[in-house]
Image (cartoon, rainbow, N blue to C red; front, side):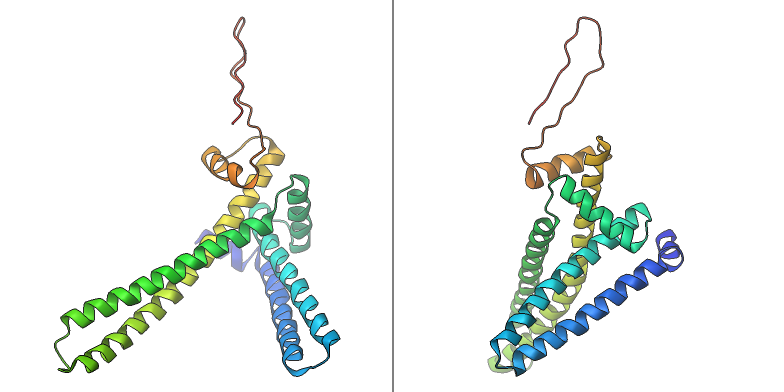
Amino acid sequence: RAATRIALTLSLGTLCFSSAVLVVCNLLRAAARSAQRNSDNYLVVLAACCLQCLLDCVEFLNKFAVVMHAITGDDFCTSGRSVTTLLKRHGLNAWFVDRIAAFVLGMTTVAFAVLAGGATYVTLISTLNSPGSVEHRQVVAGVFAGAAAAIGFLILTFTCSFINTVVDASYTCLALDFDAGAPHQPPLRDALIPIVKPDYVVVVGQPVQPGVATATAVP
């Protein structure tokens, strides 16, 4: 309830501006694809490809700007500059993490959708008594299996997009923790650091006591 209230009040301008950026990107992308299909000029095709790459970068920055805004409450442009500077300062590759997470979640979505369709088909073909012929039962089972796979794919796609956003937010929080010098979620830091920054050194200091050496842990 609180998140909805904030989205519809304090963050409404930022979200509307972000949505406008996405609309413009989609319109330009559609124009670029149309030019690629309808033009025989190699320079036009090359320019359309470059434009689509630029739009990918804009959409990616737009996504992380919204994530940064959700964390800090800054306006859209300030959030975009802040997250770019933050990730660059700590040598973190947000594109790599976002693409890897999207790839893994996408493959998981396809696998579970196919599994749901296959399980539906096997269940129906083994339990369906009518129509009487095997061919008819196969057709009915195939229709229901296709519907189950499609519905499962849509539901899992929505869920995975939400999870991917959570991954991006966690990655941004990790970068903010690097800036602060202290993690707010040590388990999350311990899980992400070996993947995104394996050369990062974690130093753990014990309370200073007379005659007791300080313990330093380097993974």
